[in-house]
Length: 418
Image 1 (tube, helix red, strand yellow):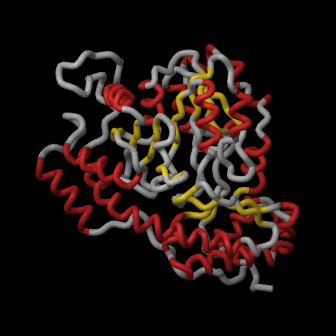
Image 2 (cartoon, rainbow, N blue to C red; image 1 turned 135 degrees about the vertical axis):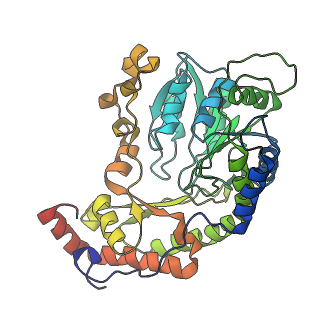
């Protein structure tokens, strides 16, 4: 039996600090300084030279032939839907377990987000739930590649092709990931990437949209750039807005993307080591990577605990892990219970016109609700940039909490989650 839990007054299992994010040095400073000296700071004319340079580097690593940069990874999903002609009254299938932006983006485009359950084995969108959710008004699917795993893109693309649907991959967690050797975001019609501060490729804020064809890229570019066609004197064919990012953000991203390949390799090796180590801890169910994932990106690492074995749910387990020095999180809320996803507060026309599609109390999403209410534990990517020692310390902290589960459960019964 390991020592007393830190949350109950014992010594912490982890005393070392995990590496900070983002990684940066004078290269980022000089890249931004060059932009400042140039006087060309913004996003117009679109795209600027540093934006083009960054996108070329990103496509070289991720794959794909066409990409645009935008203000963030939420509007990139809206841009994709608008570029594909999806709007008022159309339905877009989204997973129940994801950040609220995935469901909010269709509403911003005038469409109805249809919330479908996830696969309990990987917490990604369940193809069977997608098939069941399709109606004559369905126009698109937004699968989310979550944590360090990917949705079943073979099954999703087969469904999409059979029903003539647009696929927008939400790749906010998946920079560098590959499915059967093909980069995440290049399998569907669009791939949406966030460059927000915590993401494994970051410029502070920003987004990238990979587009399958030149025609889709031209439409997306026009949406981003106030409706301007990408060719001089071209015809205006779409109503756009200013969704541009800046040359300052592109300069940061251009340096950060050079670090991404080595960081991806480092995390991938260590996450496999973590899988092996945690497989020996009772009451833990690993979310095993599909063998068709040929390169694994690690934004967050997610595993499930069995409350019946641990005697507590994930909230108490995460509180105990935090006290041991291992930052952990219970993850997103299921979309039908998500505090940040309240469509009626938006005053957008979609929930008013279609209130029956937002009757959350009647939604049956058992896999997502179980993950969110009881079992999912999320760890930060920094664990996997700390080498074997960092992973070993994380596993030791998890084992310690498990081995002291009886004492933790007693404390929870007496005092609630600490």
